[in-house]
Amino acid sequence: MTILEGDRLKILQIADDFHSGGGKERFIYDLTEKLINKGVKTSLICIDHDNTSSWGDELNCEIIKFSSAWLSYIEDYNPDAIIWHVGVETTDKITKIVSKYNVLSIVHNATCPSGTRLFRDNDQICQAATGNMCMVNWYVRKCGTNKAPKEAYRLFNKSKEVHVILNKCKTVYVATKAMQKTLEIENIKSEKIKLFDITLGNLTDLGPIKVTNNTDVLKVLYVGRLSYNKGVQYLIEAISRMKQDNINVMCEIVGGGWYEDELKALVKKKGLDNYINFIGRVNGYEVSKYYLETDVVVVPSIWYEAAGLVVPEARGTGKPVVVFNSGGLQEWQVMMNNIYYAERTDSRSLAKTILEAKQGMKNTHQNNQFKSPYKDLCRDLIEGY
Image: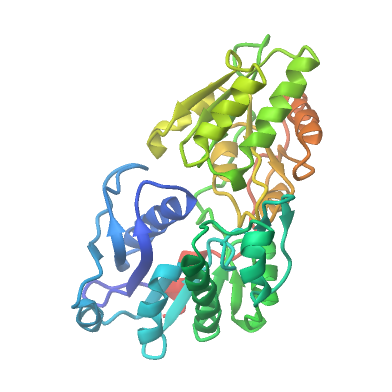
């Protein structure tokens, strides 16, 4: 389909917030750029936002906050389609428009009340549909993210509302079969769900594995938020095990978050202060230099990770990536080489797999083409209208 000037396809995007945060925000940035480059008019409405230059240049599109006139804005915009980047704080907005417009939803995370499907009492994954037990598990199984009963009840109802809306949307896009499974658990109609390439076609030739100049020290890198569900505590334990086995290893942790103090305390308790370095938050476009200086990138998420954009990002810089077999993370292994997965929540398996990834770096002549079996999202959007 060719988009003619004056007859441009118009796609309006809606999200809770748009900050310099993690994978969801990075995806919105990449998708917006891709749509603009293909001649599509797109704008973003959100509850709050700040600068959009964390991953490169400022986005060349309108980004506005919800106001009392938001419905009039959409009416004037007259979009061919609305993309809802699913979030609980915009459910009331989508409820008002889902029957009037072509609403396409992109599910970035688990849609249960906690948004993680993780029982923190024993780090087990929940496989149940949202129901009354969620209110019990919020406290008993420690899956809740806030202790206040009022907030727990609010998020419980928001989660149920999300599932009602998804069944009213024209299409529900997900990046992995793991996320498709969770939606089917929530009784989202299978015929509405479409799998898509979360890299948006930006990843093709991976190039050979790039080794660092330092062959004496095994350099390990983590990039992401510092929250409990990201599993950095297991990476720290894996580094401790390697040090006990007299392996010369150094680890850098790039990112920040609410669990940072606990992680630093664990490093101190393990006596690893000289071997694990907390870098702090950095802009997305600055992360590449950390990739280039490391040997192995580790994504130790223990929650039901939807896809994990850091995996193709790291592999695209020529580094092997180790993940836990959690959620959609292990699905990357069928799309590109040098992706290794360890048993979830097993620090011994993680340590062993990191060493296997380092040894595998000697083989730099494998097929380095990235092949996604899923849809080109932008083409699907354009050809659909």
